Length: 334
Image 1 (cartoon, rainbow, N blue to C red):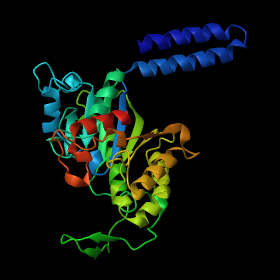
Image 2 (cartoon, rainbow, N blue to C red):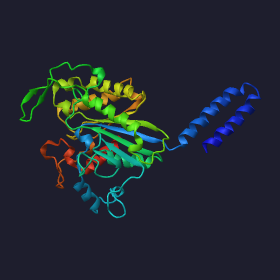
Image 3 (cartoon, rainbow, N blue to C red):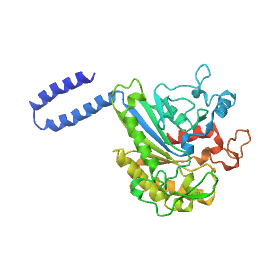
Image 4 (spheres, rainbow, N blue to C red):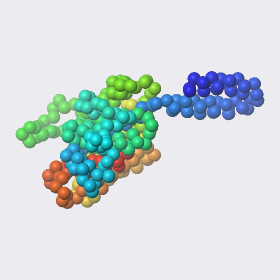
């Protein structure tokens, strides 16, 4: 009981200050420790952000996940994803908000790009939720086709150093006149701050006990790797992204996980290898190193698919749409 603990502290305070003043400092340290314990004893919401483009949205097919759950060869591995009736398990202590109002509620299968898809949030939520007694909130701020150089461009990057062009509906290049750079970045920050200010609208039984932003996952890169100009400035933009997110959310020590651009598997072409080197290098940047992590995703790719579960075609843009791959990716983020 917090109230009784504070009353006890008052009595100790009076007792100590009647004694030698050398004990005053000791009491002060003890009081801070007990106060901190009292706060942590309350139910605090542990908040995590998953941001990026289409693979962060989630492209793993539920039909594949159902096959994995039903197969005698893999049923045990994925049994935690279903309840005793064989329906998709719903996590009582993990909630998810996907973009503005795309999907909100207790985490279960179907929080991917469409309700028949899953993303990294599913296994990530299972692992984090099982590791804590806290209620967990995952905020997904993800948009397909969004580049860091333009759409997610952080404020510190300033205006682009090149004339940006986009593809029109007919596939031809059209001018991006009037395009607002960084609009997804601002949308992301606004969505996070709105979620934190209105947690009771996401978690109905929230008691006002507080929240803590515990981690930020960045899973993006394809829309930059395909443009040499964007790839060239990716390292600078990613460093600024980390700095600006921490500043704008007022969490200077916010831990970051950078998810590898890994859809080509362990062996990738030159541009993809360059992107991976950049992503890993930023996590080892001297200003970030103790609060950054690099999560490999290329090792989750199933090469030369033989089981028929390839929903992506030859491009592999979305990790073949395989549910097992997206579960593995979510686990690497956790």
